Amino acid sequence: CLSRGLGDVYKRQDIRKRERMITNFQKQSRKDDVKLLVWIVVGFLFIAWFCSPPGNKLLQLCFWGNNTKYFITKLFSDNSSTEYIFHRNNAVYLAKMYPDKPTALKEMNKAIETLPSFASDAELRNLYKDRAEIRLFLGDHKGALNDFINSDLISFSDNLKVAMLFKVAGNYKEAMNYCNAMLNQDPFAYAGFACMAEIYLSVDRPDVALRVWNLALDRNKNNPRAYVDRALVKKAMGDLSGYNTDLKLAREYSPAISEEDSIIEDSLHPKILALSVR
Image (cartoon, rainbow, N blue to C red):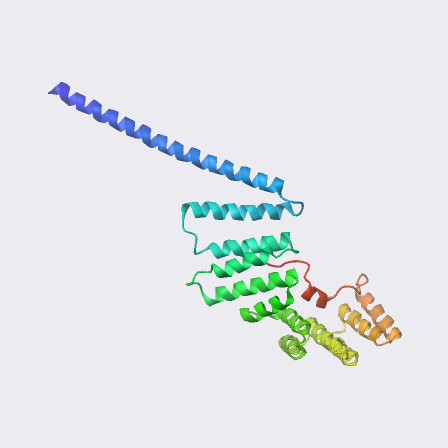
């Protein structure tokens, strides 16, 4: 009986030992799998970075990192509720990498299409606003205007963009409403005066544009940009003496100021996409 009891003890100890060996092997195997996956990801990102076309390599690396993250997440879980964020971030990267190609818009369209049905209206409006910014950056003025209006999220800083988009579309009355909206919020807003003067210049009324700049400088005599803009209106009207006088005044405040800089041009053709990834 004693020997049989000891035999049972040894058997149980042997079984436990084997179970611990199997458990340790499984843990080690999982660690090895994780290490292998990490090396595969690193290798893939390096190859993608090395083989990508000339340009901003950091942006390209972030783009491929975003795609790799999406692929790995999809392998291990259902990511349908956040897929739209992946497409939205891809659109931001693509717009910055290839501003002359429509690939970013395709991704942004996918983001809107994959937005879950339970998502809030605010999230949908945010996506329309993001697509408006991308379309404006890519030069699609008509599409940008539609998306800004559909977003219903036009901020103070967006008013000038929307006004100029309406101006490009030939709707000067609606454009003027957005100029007035800026000045109603801030009576000293340089963008509001620039917006209004640009519309009057577009309808061949430089005399009214000049009065707009006179009012702007009455409210703020220390704005060198306003002096430059008034100088350009005077030049267009043939008043070269007034043009030179205003340029001199502008350079007293800002010696390096340039006639080429234009808030109007920047609003229609932004050099930088202000969107960031989520």
